[in-house]
Image 1 (cartoon, helix red, strand yellow):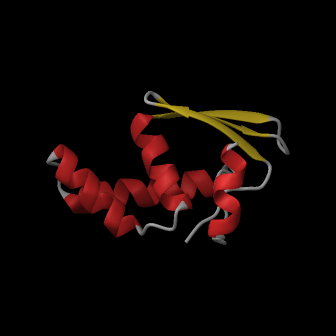
Image 2: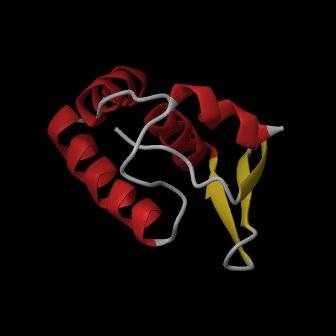
Length: 96
């Protein structure tokens, strides 16, 4: 499971999200799908569950989507948008 970094501030809408990492001074843009995946990961949803939902929505093979999500999750961790720890109490506080 993953948790958002406490130094993150996000603005989300139907087009995606803009996430500011105040500690690094870096702003990241996520498209609608990237934002959906990021939010699901921060809620503690598994990669497999996210892939199955996206596969249902798009008709793409779940295995392909799952591989893409795993790669995306790694990029999110490397950029500081996710950490390895999950705390449901703190995730939603950072979206205020």
